[in-house]
Length: 406
Ligand SMILES: Cc1ncc(COP(=O)(O)O)c(C=O)c1O
Figure 1 (cartoon, rainbow, N blue to C red):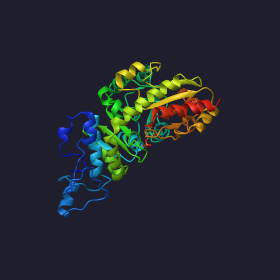
Figure 2: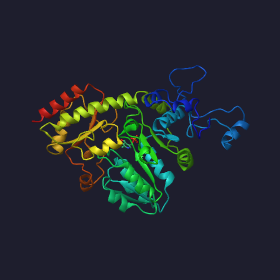
Figure 3: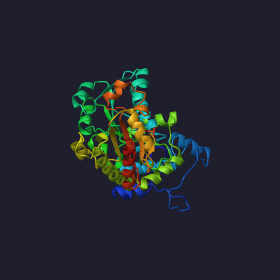
Figure 4: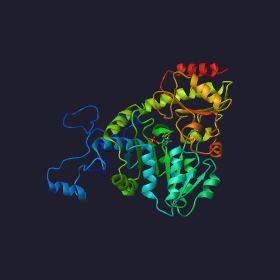
């Protein structure tokens, strides 16, 4: 075992298992001499060597073995290997958060003079990297309307190194055609990077549609119970084990073994949870869609969604999130949120608990009014991360909060 690869025993066999079996067992069982059932938590920063000769060999990469947990750790390797099998990639490397993953993808790949083409509708911190940090380092960025293929085509340049997007987008749940954007990226040799957080590995596998790199905030559905921060990047062995691994090793956005252990346990129930989140979300979207106080519902699994056909092509369901606009403005949105009881006000998502947020005043408050409106983020918009409670209780909670406003 080296810190550079995860050659966990039986990896070959688990690649042939079906998804749900891979998510429970998938090559993640590096059992210690005690034969524990649950994956061992190797909570250690460093490793002892039997001799200085062995230490020298490990540093030279001549023998297998861990060196330091910033470089690699057995529990983190188990999480990486299981995610790698689920996504069907050659390699994976975990990071300390989703933003550490996005930042490491950019920083490990880009140099001054390079160009990044991205969709406008992104998580707020990713927009900060693209709008503020990268330009400061001499890296040009262009943001386009993700649904406009001509804009992607017009935005690509000979020096474009990375093309970056989320689909469904945050927070308005628009979809972007992965296959078509991948073609645009590849026409100049750029890599397509997909933040797949809103779809989860269960509902969308971007590599099948031509993406080169997939990343997650594991903080969301992979943990699934709002406990730990984490992230992961997946791609070819050449990509992950090249500049990307070197960047993470040298700069330190490594995943804690404890958090990796929590994520591993989360993966065991990911498929079950995402299916239930989606069933609940679809029912809530239909309830809101028919309510007289709701102006608009955005849910990719509803036939009135503008990208409903695309959702059938590239997603295995409508997903765990619902966005909607209340009739009115910020005042009505706040009044409604204040009346909710089971559904909690929180900017996180992917929790067993249903969480609602008001993007204008939280995740997207750094943007100007014009920028927000261009993204469809109005003061009446809310994003609901649908949890695992009984959906009837959630509907009744929404109903009483909407009713109490009249
Ligand atoms: C789509 C998306 N990408 C990235 C992130 C960043 O993840 P983290 O909070 O784990 O850094 C988030 C967090 O909310 C997100 O929603």
